[in-house]
Length: 99
Image 1 (cartoon, helix red, strand yellow):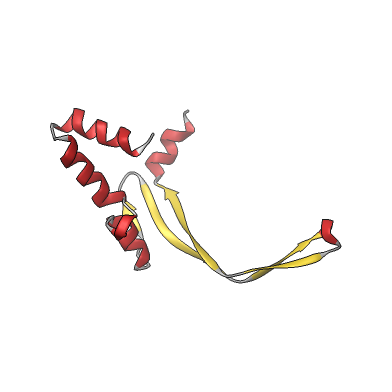
Image 2: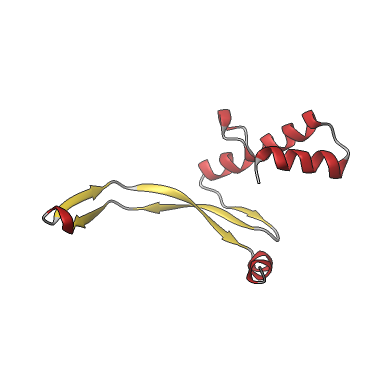
């Protein structure tokens, strides 16, 4: 599913114009100019919990070293960083078990 599919669904199911639907989707998911509420919240290090769907949050990794055995045990230093983690809700996990 793509962003355009979500917009099409909003138009067909909620009697809104395509322009309004795009504005709604962008206000939630957009990363351009930090418009989306999910991105804004994650950048403030806040959890984003969507009831019945799941939780997005930032997880941080410390600096670590990785040994590469194929290169005469060369050690590669991996810098600290962060990533977005998603944990599905219990309801979503149960739905996905039955696929």
